[in-house]
Length: 436
Image (tube, rainbow, N blue to C red; front, side, top):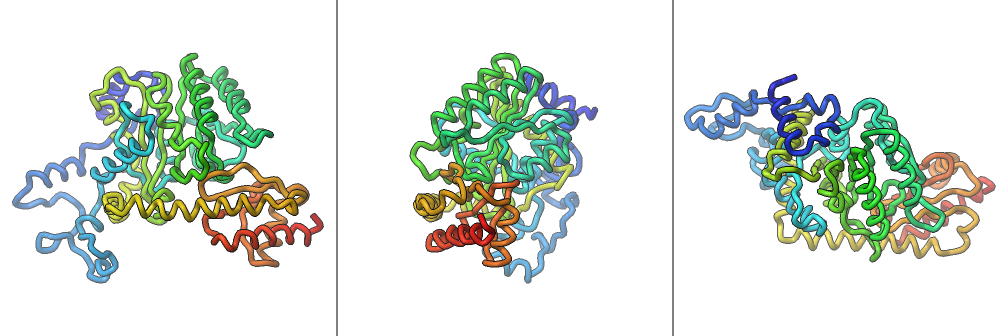
């Protein structure tokens, strides 16, 4: 093992030995190299005369660039747009995002968390998490309705054993008893379990209530206290898009930080959906757990392993994208702009609920609970979902997503309010066309 990796592992063991035990085999071996990057950083600081270290081109003391490129980048200098960003991410952006986490999650007050490490979108954050923490055969607990890419990242690429529980109960809320049963069942069989939570939930658009969140946190704390090592990863891709009063409006990451020495909380989020910059691909990975010492060295060690993983994969996320997101976060208009877009999405969600109260739809489908995010789902009563999807696409020019045998996902996020009633009437007509 590389001596730098051994040094990082010693720091992690000192801070929390259970966290070290939860690292994957790859995670234990990862480190951030003291090679070209560190030598380049030293030269940047001290090489005042000539700096011939970094692999970029310069001209007259400035970053070399093409005018045709810079004309498309209004107001961001080549040094903040075209050069390599650190594998950790831009320092100012990492600090700004962490400040935002404390602001948006009151339960974090007084708790110590890592600096977020910047990833190339939330998908890359999940993949990086998997590299660091998932061994072949590790169990990952997710609901039965889930984002399909989890399987590709965790099962196909990492060899994890994915096990599922019913997401929803008959009373119209999250199936907390099923969640508890599955968690305790796997905790009895394994000394380490991984629980992946996603709220607002894709595909259903559901976020747990405050009461449900309290119960889930209680279950996870109790299982950890019973001796099982638990990694709770919160995929908070759609964080903040909560449309109803009783919804839990902070991440379970905040509730679980420092909950138990055997519980590691990992927050996977990004500007992608929160700030409506899908193609900029700026995500974050943040750690929180109970530590023996809080001098910062433990989290720095985890950050260095995470950055080493990124360095050995994509090198770094886009400097330009990070600079754009940072400028937006620092702009005095930022919160008001987000509030305006939030209200548009909230009105669309409420319009969907209003339309679906019409009893004419009752024989065609059931509506899954939804209160947040971009999506909602219906469960067809009489037809195959893929058959209906193809019919609607070919006969009416309407595109939806089929999920399994009966479920259809509708992204109300991309519908204007005056399109919503028409859409559901077309779906109903399509069902009737097919004899449903």
